[in-house]
Image (cartoon, rainbow, N blue to C red; front, side, top):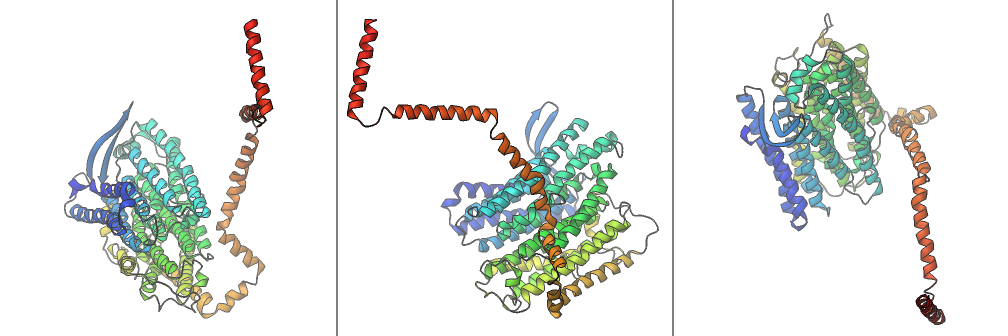
Length: 628
């Protein structure tokens, strides 16, 4: 199957071209088959390729295809060449398989939208761009896919562009991610200056020979690449765009959060792990940013009332766990959490979309309630996703992937108690807001009547993702419980194993603490939002607690801070610049033309006497000139 590697990104690209050029003339059923079918075909090829890879791994460790030479400029020669090793296969499986389920769900969810073809064209291009990003064998082609997902996020977040708030959200995402993209581009220039190549395999081979560990140049390059990852993955301090990105349709949110854009930063750091390992400073920065982000975003998720914004802050927090794992050197643990997170986060967004659709586009969780019996399939699948998000021990995928990160936050060579405390606090918070979300939406009295129930094209993807949210974790058991590590055995052929400290307490102790903290979070949510709501009502009477709640609801005030630090000064400068000498010159030219126009318009006043007088004056002028 490896000879058909090029078809994996080519099929979504073909779907985009057909739908963008001829979509207006096609029936919706044909559009659905093209949009979902091309992604489904790519997923099938990926699965067959993965089976071939496991049965007979290539001698080089990766399948590679050179499609064509792109361009040459001086010493830089760039080819359109794609590759697939164990790390890439994990990502392309998630992108295509989860992406296909989201597309199938979308065929029903978007059925009433007049821009059906535009939606699927953009979704296909989104998947194609992400595939190019993870399959590229050089950083220039990777950067093409990197900018492609940025473009598609802009198109899809602002898909319903008639609403000004949606356009604002799309612009915000585009502007903020450009900050990281610019830093990343500078990092690529510096990397090429140092190594003379942007071929990923060459960089990984040559970097340890060219740079000394801790060298200033490699630290600067790693931090610039990290800035790119922070922007795309919505990590501190560039996280503010993602909650507003919920303006797009729910399938878009699922695709962005589970399979495409926000995981790009995780892939970049994992792929370029050699550069980060040469810079202890950058590794520490990655870990600290991840730990702070997971805690800050988790706190904001606790108080949100919009169901999609709760899940958005949850994504920021879970990506923070991945960054924490990358920063302490637990590379395969970060990728494993990416793998399981894709299932339960896609499930939660799609199930939330079904709830919103059934409740007449209601987003406020406190206007929902009582849905566990009337929407049984959605309830059960949402429960599986929420349990996995909360990392319910031994029965959910989220536990098997998050538990190693909590352990490595302390036990890895780069770990420390500060990182572990933030990570374990984040585990409590996640369990708490997951319980809050489930109880408020599905228990209690019904506050909004249920309209249309989701059909099979929406529920079947939910069931498949629900199974994945429970079963996907069993491919990698904790090594101190059962020695079954299919996942890490493959991924660690590409990524190095984590380096542990010496003389550590038993990992079983940390697993027990993590389990107790999770149950404590679940119980706290149960008490406050089900068994004893009076406590919560009492807290709401406190002005101090209300102020804290509003502070967290506003995302810790980051939007207000950036507005004061950047937006207002920029607007002030533009207002001053509006009256500079160049503008005065152009305004003067424009005003002169207006004045001349007014003078000339006096000659066209509609009076016959003025016209005759004007003709006579003209004749007299001509005769006078001839006599002279």
